[in-house]
Image 1 (cartoon, rainbow over the protein chains, first blue to last red):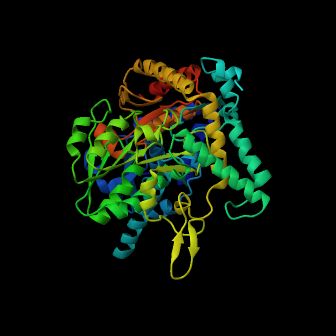
Image 2: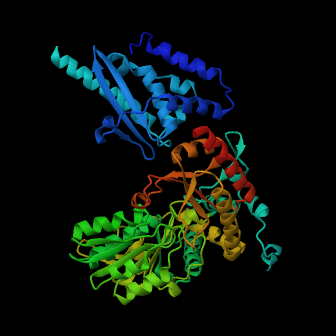
Length: 149
Length: 414
């Protein structure tokens, strides 16, 4: 799927969606995230390999990346539906972008929708490690691309 | 003096709650329901006050000072040793070693007694339900010495298979190190029987009392444990303070753990003469404030009365178990006949982390994950559980909140 909107535009869409929710009701935010998690297609078994695992203390995330026509495409899954929802948003923002776009993405939307606690050390679902791993894939593809040029 | 509270047959939980200031706070706009007591308990006002009093009244380094403050701090520090001796009925105050916590206590034994006594081919027995801190130190030791780690299996209820234990024991067994109460299942293990059998085989026994010491009456002499370890912070006391109890003749025969100040009698570059027990194992400046205040926490438990506390906690356990069992798709992990007030459970197709996050939105603090007992989780065929653990200040109304919360959360996640 070609991503026509910029990263900032996609982030803004998510932020706007969250603004429609009652900011005092944490459940509403999580219902949105859970819904995103449930909608993200289950990852095919062949991608659920040891090397695709990002192991947090509690939930497990599988993240796979493909590179075609100069863009990076992500696929992911998790055994925690909330974690899966959070990755789903990251995929929405980062998948189908160039390596450079991914590397420089600041991902401010995570703070703006009030999910920054998931970036903290105390939350062991490792949103931070997911972001890092996505950027690492982009860096690796970029290095490969430069080699081939 | 007999107070009116002491005469009352049942514990007045609402009066107890007033002693714990943190229980007045809100989390995410809801009154806090604290069910993570097996990780650490909250602290009563008396403990908080004692900590402030120490720092504002008599803060000093202990044992070597000639001035008044040092004398007062030393006296208070040593008073805790006497209180601990009494709390676990040790034979002598020298048998009480202060550490940073249960983990350090176990490591102390592994590094000193273990290194001195374990040889290639020797066997160390632990169980399937051990916390990582009662697995890893022995694994390290076994690797270093070429010794073998043996593991007592459990049944589906989460109880040790005593027949299998007896079969594991042999002349090769040098040490048995077992948890008194499982932090993940709540199972109370038959430690007296475990110790007697080990002793008959000629082995030394270490008991991890991190979870048991707050709930059960501990009598190390009656139990006949060679080593017993526990932590202050699970007994309404400060963090960073632990106890290693050891039989005097064993402690005396052991080499030192860490070298430094406090643990010496005389130092020259040729030779150091070590201090007597218990100071031999207490190198460096300890957690003076925390250790002093630990006594205040023990006073709180003694004044409230362990029997009363246990009766209250058992009632909470029964009440919560009954209600949790009615939730469709919920399975309690750990159905031992003897349990403390701690319930682990899993819900069909729902990750415990998601339950924990959504309960937190309701101000309810539970612990989720593998509870530092990954081998146990593997034995149970799961990756983690949600754990609610109850303390003296918890109420049935709070359990009702948990049940209500769980119904909503499961609906959201299913």
